[in-house]
Amino acid sequence: MNELWLRIYLLIMAVLVPLLINTIFNVLIFKYVRASTRRIRPQPISINANSNNNRQPIISRREISLLKQMIFMFCVFIGGWAPACSIIIIEELITLNPLFFQCSLKVFELVMLAITIRFFICDHDMKEYLINKIRQHVQR
Image (cartoon, rainbow, N blue to C red; front, side, top):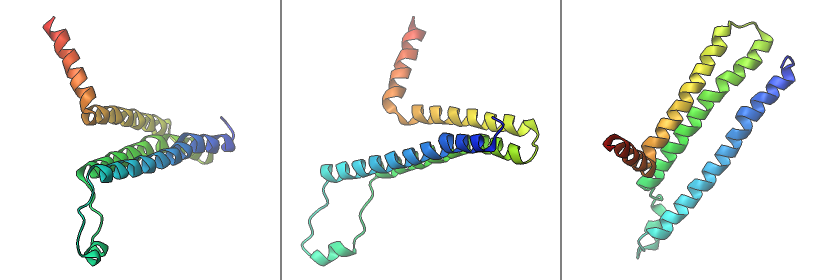
C-alpha cells in the first residue's frame, strides 16, 4: 500500500462506512425499542389536553441503558479503528516512528478486549451460561 489513495480508501472502508452503518442500525434499534416500550407501557391518559403538550416524553431506564451501550460501543469503535487507519495515512505525509503504529495496534487490541468484556457484563444470559459451564467443569 504505497499509494495515498489506497490508504484513504482503507480509512473510508474500515472506519467511515462501518461507522455509518452502525449509526443507522443503532437509530433503527433505538426507534424499535422506544416503540415497543410505548406498546408495553402506554402513557396514562390525561383529562386536561393542554398538560400533555407541556410534558416531555419520559425515557425509561431500559432506553437510557441502551443509549449508554450504543454510545460506549460507538466511542470504542472510533477509538480502536481510527488511530490505526489514520497513522497509515499520516505515515504517507510524514515519517513516523514505527512505535506509533505498534501503539495504535495495542490500543485496537485493548478496544477489542473492552468490547468483549462489555458484552459479557451486559448480556445476562451469556453470563449465566458461562458461570454454569465453569461450575460444571469445576465440579468434575
